[in-house]
Image (cartoon, rainbow, N blue to C red; front, side, top):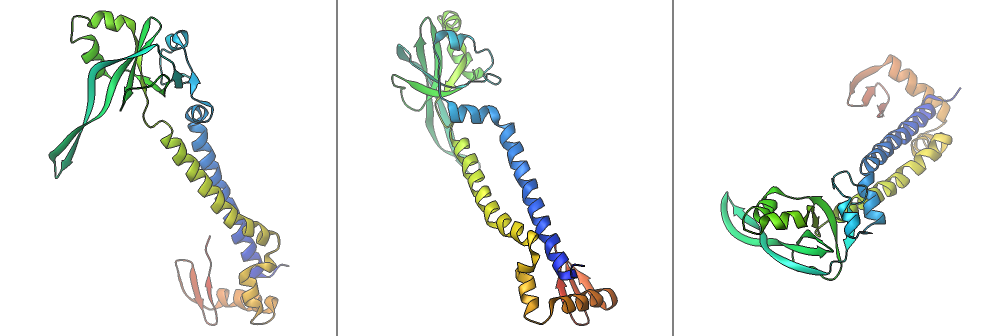
Length: 242
């Protein structure tokens, strides 16, 4: 029969491996839930022309929404997006965070959000048209109705699509590295618990099997205090955690 201390070390290592596998399953489930984004992050940007853009009715469900377009020209709509900085609830500074441009795609216009005027090729993610942008473009001037008919009901945002992807990859890389550091020795000790550092420490005191029997008997018959995984008996103090 395996000594009590050896069995406890083996069980602790198995628990550690199981906990990391559960954490890995949670990580994989999180990545799977972001599958559409990751596919676009890794395989995009997808080149889109006028017919392909016309086929996108809902950017929130479109399989390809991180795209690259090549307009014939880019026009300034005159609409800007501002951001106001506050301090203690009081506005301190207002600055223009982005502009809205109209990219000519054949017979249609694609509204683009960008900090600077886009170049010959524009890369970004397709989003629903914000209501305040639509109001300013389509309902504030005599040409609004014609502009609305010529424009796609979607927006191309050129800012920050890949940021979340880089964060996700960094988190996954750190997790896998930590998993390697902790699971590798746990697997080794679970297969051969006699190599566990706790067993090596006990072996310095004497025969492991005899000491293990003494500790087990001490815990059963002479336990004096137990709290937060620490058990005090007459001759031994044992830390026993998951």
